[in-house]
Image (tube, rainbow, N blue to C red):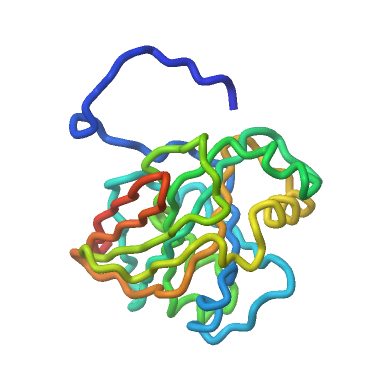
Length: 223
């Protein structure tokens, strides 16, 4: 990612539409990175980071609509801290992992849970267009060590976790992924979701709130 150049122009937030703050070449997600979430779905805690990909076409921004596919009856929210890669990263040592991070934002790993169970692997259930809301912006001055991660649906709290409860911390995750695949500037890593995932329905509004970053708000509609 190149240097940021500020124009000096200012706009009221209510007068603009915030797009996704990046269009990644890939979104790499970490599954079962909170023990309580693994348990609520009846899964064991993994011995190493469990990684999967979401396509770039699944990415949407704040206020964009999450579309519920007709062939799923159980689409669920997953509030997550997302990190944005700032430089080409391959075989990164754990102690140098933060050197490749540009910043952090809110993410929602929307999942068709019934399809995930039916398919066993995750591609279809997590790959639909609109299934990766990211935003509302990238926070570059941020300590991810112990921050609250929450999901609210129609104003009611469903998930209320903290990054200190991650099984694999951020340096471990970055190093592990970079030894599998090259991370490119703008790529996104979703770091896992705490317990409390739940169903989304037509007409809902889902909010991912992360302390120190802000709120990612998306309406939910049938496709």
